[in-house]
Length: 322
Image (cartoon, rainbow, N blue to C red; front, side, top):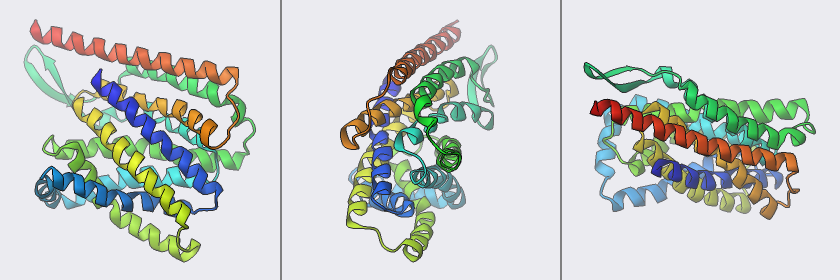
């Protein structure tokens, strides 16, 4: 249950991203600066944390062993995740982006065949290619149905170009984030803690953010003071707090793809938090009864997903005992 709770707290801090990104876009800020400034601000905070825990040298040692893999999967997990999210903010409201992002619930499950997991058999523990957890996926579909209900009325008012440019990049991000995260967990093999891994991935993704910043400076000019300040808030809340919480939750279930899918499903709570944030900060309209029904479905799906995951773990323990 602890990984699920950590995942929900991570969803709360992640939701701030969608609200502030939309706020910056409405104020005329470039999506390029919204994306790159977040990771520039994350570096000093994470370095202080890792140095304070006396874990910087082991991290640098691990990064030197496989620099190409760190660069690749950090760019995928952070770059192809956050740049499309910020780009979408220019074409769709925060609630639609937050709702579309929940496709990661299914995206994460669909990635299972790309990885290996440890399975207990009569012959002992063996490693085999992961299988798509269709039972857990059924619970995820309930969550997705709730999200669709929440956004059904609003989506009817969007143009086709807004849907394509506001939704498709988020779909790409929904696959990139769990793929990069899992590949890095596989590469690290439990030798690094959460803070080290987040810092390492942030450092390894910096080449992308530097290139984007140069392009942004040429095409849009420097960021405004307001955008810089809000990007700093995103860096702390979403980039540091939420990312560390989410990675900690996934680390706790590393090697169990079914529980990993359950943790990733907790990110559906971002929609609820985003709705509340928009009501309080952006003067959004009150959700309709249909939207509230969708929220109830999301919470029911979350509970069922968690219960199913715990039940499967108990069955594995019983099988081992036998």
